[in-house]
Length: 89
Image (tube, rainbow, N blue to C red; front, top):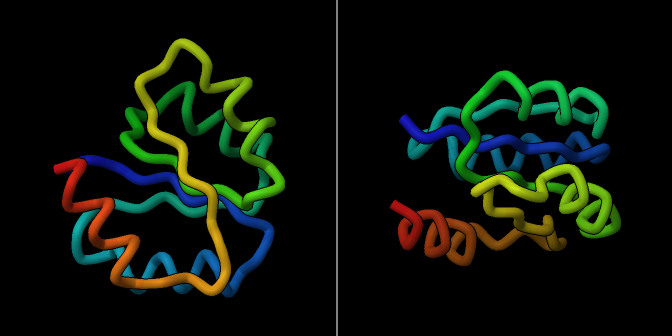
């Protein structure tokens, strides 16, 4: 199963994405960029969701990977997220 890493300082965002995506992919949740870096080193990740203001920092350490990065935009729209995930399958 393809894994999605959700890294957000906002617990509500993490939980919303967990509810939306939990039936479709294995999820790993964290609130720390430093933890996310360690997870990426040891785990095969397909998609990385992160806060909009962290996207450039995340893209720097994901250089030379095939991981797709998605900014978490609020409000979180279930239909848009599922549409994207289904396209990646």
